[in-house]
Image (cartoon, rainbow, N blue to C red; front, side, top):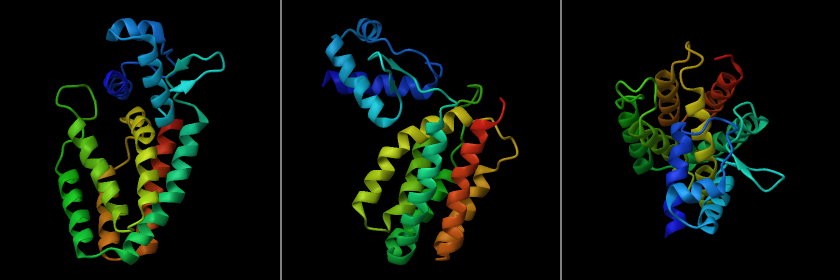
Length: 212
């Protein structure tokens, strides 16, 4: 489907940083660049708005969200409320298969380089996939499809936030953060695991308010 292809290409371009924060996403120009109709591009842009990767402006235009937009702080706050609560359910309900998934996804994440070699601090696609798999595995033990759908909807917008904050807050040790979350989760310490996960989100949000 043409709109799905254009959506995927624009999504990846925004996440790569091909468009600067606040840059206009002009349907006519994009239609020409992708060799599709204006209607196809508009459909793709509406999907990006739903994912939090584009803004729909009052004059009906589209733009990449601003890096300083309060939405990103709101997103971190929302994740810090929803995901630790879902993690508590996972710790309460999760079985041995769930524990094995958490351990396996963390193992892969810990051993996957975060940045592309020689790419000047660009987060690697392989690491991004491993990162998502670990965070989703944490919540899968809850058995709650609505919570997992909520996670899926928030993830893309969070991915953009994470890539914008990459390289900022140099004292941050994300490897250690993930390890502590995994250890507390597998120890079935719901209070510690939930607090560590909430702190993980707050550090990402804080990095966006720091000067580059």
